[in-house]
Amino acid sequence: MGWVADGLDSIRSFQIRHVLTQIVSLGMIVTSALIIWKGLTCVTGSQSPVVVVLSESMEPGFKRGDILFLQMNKDPIRAGEIVVFNVDGREIPIVHRVIKVHERHDTGEIQVLTKGDNNFDDDRLLYAHGQLWLEQHHIMGRAVGFLPYLGWVTIIMTEKPIVKFLLIGALGLLIITAKE
Image (cartoon, rainbow, N blue to C red; front, side, top):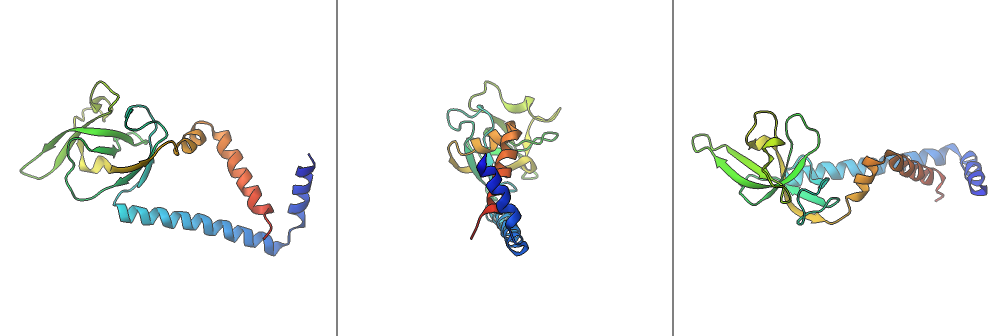
């Protein structure tokens, strides 16, 4: 427990200027992350350019914990593409494959039907009550790449909040006690 006492003595001995420098550095890191995120949304055209696969519904192609990179452009969505969509009334986006596309020739609007690769039935039961097709505004983006397993960090921090608080606390303590 000597390291705890040493850490507390270290915190007490800081000068105000050093603490302010650390706070400004932390603020710059957070601001940089937000700028990078906003830049990615502009470049990819997707409101959420990176998502984590949260279920096994797309196995064997994508496993739980994979990180997907999304892009949204003006090209029409076609059957076989993997899309990420939001359903009215649900917060968490869903990653599934487009199995049917219905194009209205009079308006040019496209409606799609999706299904998880590992599911037996299409997603109509996941859609809002009475909704049979997804429309363009439901689609967040198309999967254009992925990194396997790296999303487990997010899943663990969501499912076990104590891990998130411990990690944030440890990083905060590291930043405060770091010496240049």
